[in-house]
Image (cartoon, rainbow, N blue to C red; front, side):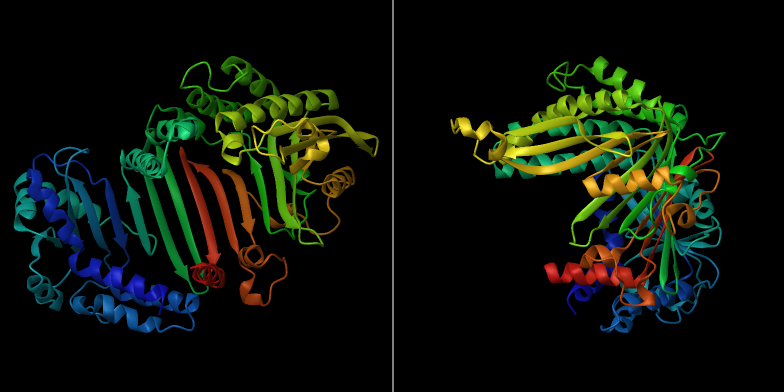
Amino acid sequence: MGILKRVAYLAATFSVAGLSVAEGFAAGGGVSEPFAPPFFQVHLAPPKRFVPTVLSFAQKVFPDQQVHALPMLILGLWGYPEFVGLSDSDPVGLFFIPAGSKAGPFFTVACAKMADDAPMRTALALQKFATKTFTGWTFISSGNEVLRAIESSGYGDDLAELAGSALENDFVVELGSGMVGQFVDECEQALVDGLAASGDISKHMPAFSLFAIAKDFANQIEKISIGGDFFGEVFSGHVRIKPLVGSDLSVLFREPTNPIDISSVAAAIGDSGLISFVWRYDQQKLCRLIELAIDGLFSGGPSGLEGVSERELSTFIERMFSRCTGATAGQLSLDGDGNLVVGEIVAADINGDELAAWVDFSFSTVVHAMVERCGLAKNLNRACFVDVNRNAFVHCGLPVIAVSISVEDAPLGQDSPESQEQDRREIAGELYFCALDGAVAAANSEEAIVALIDAFLAGGHDGRSLADEIHFASGDMAGFRADIQGLLCGTVERSSAAAKHGLTVSIGLDAGDLTVNFSIGASDIAAIVAAFAEGQ
C-alpha cells in the first residue's frame, strides 16, 4: 500500500501511545501551578461524523487502495465504527499545556464527552491511561499526576470550557503565542546542523538574515488557527493569523476603509493560465512591511548589501511604491512550445524615465548585491551579470525596457579574457517592463509583454479575464488560482470535468486578523500524491 501503509502505521502508533509522550516531560520536572493556556490544541468533530467524512474523501484521493480498512486498524481499539458511548454532537480535543513555563516541559491531555459505561473507558484502562471528569467532559492523560494537579488547581473547568467551544469546521488546530517563533528557531537550528554536517557553513551565513526577519514577524503573532472541512470532492480550509495587540503586524492587518479597485489590471489578464492572481494592498502599509524586512536584512550591520545603504534602499522603495495604487494582476502560463510565460500588470502613476530608473536600480544594484550577499555566484562557481537596456524596442509608441540576467560559462578563477564577452555568457533569465497610462506591464518574454500592452490599451483581454473569474469581498486583498494537474503535467488541458477545481486561495483582513481561505479538489490531491509516489 506504499504511502498509506506508512500513514496507517504512524496513525495507529499515535492513537495508542501518543499521550504517553507527555509522561516523560511531566516526570522530568513535575507539574507546577498555576497552569498556562495551551500552546497547541486540536479539536475534531464528533468521531461518528468526522471519521466517515474523512474516509469518504480519502477514498477519492486513493481510489485504487483499500482505504476503508485503515479506520479499523487505527481506531478499532477506540470503538470504531459506532463509537458507542461517545457523544454524537460534541467534539473531541487534544491539548498541549506548558507545565509551569512556556519554555519548559509540557504535558498532553485529551478530552471527550462519553457515557460512564462507554467501551472506550475499558480500552483506556487496558492501555494504562488515567481519566477524570470535569463539568461533563472526560479528560485523558498518561498518568494520574497530571489530572490530580488539574483538579487541585481548578484548571479543569477552564479546559472543559475550551473543549466545549463551538466547532464550526470538521477540525481546528490552534497554535498559541510563542509556538510560531519556536518553530522558526528549530528550522534555523536544523539548517545550521545540516550545513555543519556537510562542511564549512561560513559561506552560507549571510542567508541566515532571512531567519532574523521571519523570527521578528513570528514573535508578533498571538495565535494561528487552522481549520478545514471535507465537502464531497473538495477540501476547504482556512488559516487565521491573530497579531499581538500593539505590534507592527497589528497595524499592517487593519482592514482598509477604502478598498482598492482592481478591475483595470484584472481585465488585462486572461483566465486560462496555470497560475493566476490578483492583489491589492495599501501601499503605505506595504512600504512599512518592506521596511521591517529591510531592518532584518541589514541587521548584521552597514554591510548588509554591498554597495547599497539601508537608507538609500528604503528611500528608493518608498518613493516608487508611493506611485503605485496597490492593484496588481498576473499569470503564469505556457506558450505553444511548452515554455513558461509570466506576465503582470501593476496599477501605477509612473512614466517611462522613472520606470527605467527603478528597473536599473532594482536589478543592476539591488539584485546584483543580493546575489553576492547570498553567495549565489560562489555556489554556482560562476560570475553573474545583470544588464539593463532602457530602450530594447518600441511597441505602440511605448519604449520597452529589457533586463538580462546571465552567468559566465567558465568557472571562476579561469583567466580567460573572452569569458567577459557577451557570447561567453549563458542567459539565466530575461524580463521586460513597459510604462503604460496608469500602469506598468512586466513579463519574461517579448511576446508576453506585447500581449499585455495590447490588452491594456484595448481596455481588456480578448475573452474571459481575471476580472470575470476572481471576485473580491470588501476585506479581501488577494485572490489566487492554480491548475494543479496542469502544473504537474505541463499543460493547461484537463482530461475530465472532475479535474477542474484546482487550488483556489483568497487572502483578506478581518477584524484585525489576516485570513487565508483555500480549497482544493480531491482529484488534485490525488495527482500530487501520485507525483510524489513516482518521485520516491
